[in-house]
Every structure is written in C-alpha cells, then in structure tokens.
Image (tube, rainbow, N blue to C red; front, side):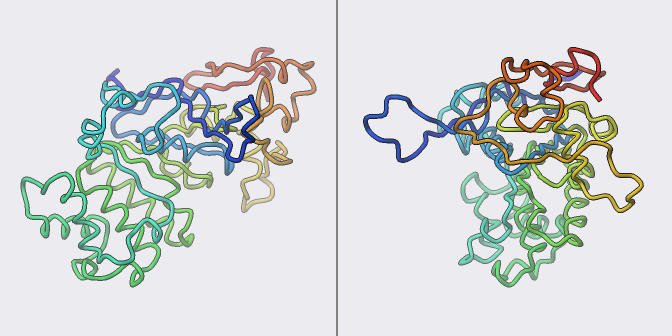
Length: 331
C-alpha cells in the first residue's frame, strides 16, 4: 500500500483561557484537539464529523498550520510540516489549501472576482502554461461559472456562486490536499447537493485529497470514503463510510445517527439520540470524555470515568475508543 499523503500523529492544540488572575498558579487551557492521529491518501476523502465545539475545524486549521499545533506531528508527503520555517511553509501552501465555511466572509468585498482569483498567482508566481487571465477563465469554467463573473463583486453573486469562487481560489495552484471546512453548511439545501457533486467531480479530475469537515451527516456520507467521529477534541470512531453508517461501533456515533432525521418513521434507529450538553473543553471529564452522556457507562462499573479508552480495531478497518468493546457486547 502506498504511503499516505497526510499523516497526523498525536496532534494537540490548546488555547490558554483568557482573563486568568495574575496570582493564579494553575494555567487553564481549552483542549480543542487532544491527541488526534489519522492518515489520508491521495484521492481520498476523510470526513470529520461531530457536534459544534468538538474541535473538528481547529483540527483542519492545525493540519494546515493556520493554527500552529501545541504538539504532535503533521507529515505531508513525508515532510514534517510542524518543523518547517516560514519560507518552507509558504512554498508548501500551493499543495495545501482550504475552502472556508462562510462563502461571503472569506471573500474580500472590495475586490472583483478576477482580483480575488489573481492573488494566489501574485504570491506564488503565475502558472507556467498560461497567462493569469486564461487561468482565471479556466478556474471559473471548472466550477460552473462564466468569464462574466470575473468582473463582479462578491455581493453581486448568490451564496452558491460565492462558494464556487472559494473553490476556484483553492484550486488555483493545483493543490494535492484541500481542507473543506463545512463548505456547504451556509448554503440552501438545493445548492448543497450541487456544490458537493462539484467537489466530487473535481476530486476525480485532479486526484485531490479532501479533509471534509461537517456536522451534517448526509453531506459526510455523500462524499466520504472514510469517516472520523470527534468528541471533545478526540476521535472516538474511525471507519470506512459504509461500515460506520451501517454498523456504528461507538455509542456517540450511534446517538448521532439516531438524531439524524429519517423520512420513513418505520426506519427509526433503536439507539437514543444523545442528550444533555457537551462538557466544557476547559475541564473535560476524566476517562472516556463521553461517559457523562453515555447510556452504557453505568453498566461498566465506573471504568468509563476512570480509564481513557484507546482507539482500537473492533472490526476489519473499523476503530472505536470504547470500553464496551472490551467486554464483547457493544450494541
């Protein structure tokens, strides 16, 4: 099997809590990402899903060094990104790009679309095989827009058109990896499917690897080869999409799927949707971080609150961090 394009090992990202008193000796931090590891291969899509505040967007930004990690390793094509200097990292930006969640806030409202799409070439140099103007026309065509859109401002475009511009900007330098940070959550449902299909088409054409971050399970299922489920900064389940949606192994994954609306009431899940609020990432629960909301925790005699479960293989290609599987009776 070929080496992964992206290899993340024990990635940690913490933020100091603001407003601490000067005489406080204990340094409190937000545990946004806490020991995350995964591989991503060329042409593959890894979906990352979880509730708001679970750390999935921070994970994507840390992988790109937009938020330098506190510790851990990010290997891109065998090179350690976390040890690169500013000049090396800048040169690598052409291979690693991001599509932001907000298709309006991520575009400069004072610039025409042609100027927005020209910026990558001004920073990294013009493409070798065509002029910048020709390349912009190619990019607009690739995302379903026309050369006429080049002279418009972002406010003159619809939400879906603005997100297509964001995708075109990410494609400008022919990257190998794109972090898609909830790229359809701000769009109408009718437009979401169009943008998702566009992303899949572009992936096939350019052999792109996607780290696809979303809280909508339908979008993740539509585009992902594998799925990582995050809870309070950690991956609690990692599996291929088919296995995860058919046979979820972790109680949190089961609860997420149970909460997903189903058009046929006869096909409702037997699992109960997750209840209660996610604990604070400043003071996460001991042991399994999900145990305060898990319907199985009481049956394991306090082990869930005392011992942190390891992410281990519970079925071929399916990994879960749950003590329930140690007893061989996970539902």
